[in-house]
Length: 225
Ligand SMILES: *Cc1c(COP(=O)(O)O)cnc(C)c1O
Image (cartoon, rainbow, N blue to C red; front, side, top):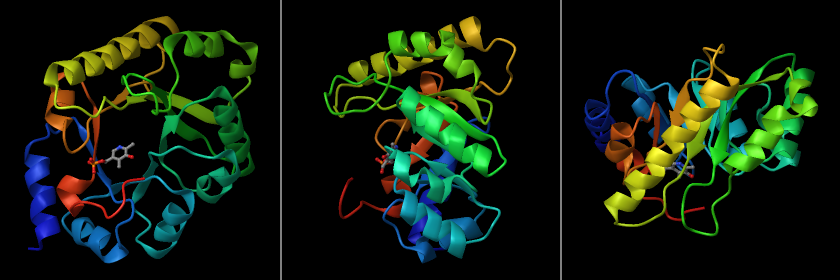
């Protein structure tokens, strides 16, 4: 058993079976991904389109690739044919471009709406007003090659557990609000993607359905894009 495999199995023991574990493999070499693949991990998260395309081409085809980073519209085409879920839709423009790319591939791409819940200035994401405007627009109704599968958010990078819990609670309440108002008849609207290495147990307590864990599995990264 390698260190990476031991790490993965330990993380999995801390996650209830109904919560999905996304192994965040950004910047990590393919042999490390294969190590966790060999102990059953099938969902990987990447935040660079070209890196994800290359890994998808080289690795087993039953891997589900989740895109978790800021996605530039000119890069969508590299991942549109195979991406299983885009966690990080942060503008209507991006959603429209994903829809176009999905249409060209004759498929529907599941997407999460990324919400801005942290106190930091730098994080990407919608606020609730923007999403209400979008979901009420006729242009939104015209998109039929995307499917909104839920919400995603990142908490402030802080030691203050209360602050983090507050932000996760906020995302969970946004999820329920949207579910009630717009998606009550859509069983596919079901994901709350929140929680990373430092805060995933807290996120699960606050209702996360999907955690994105990188360094606790693969070790720390040389750079942190
Ligand atoms: C890098 C990254 C993660 C994983 O971070 P760790 O702290 O290494 O677990 C999760 N979500 C997003 C959006 C990321 O960019």
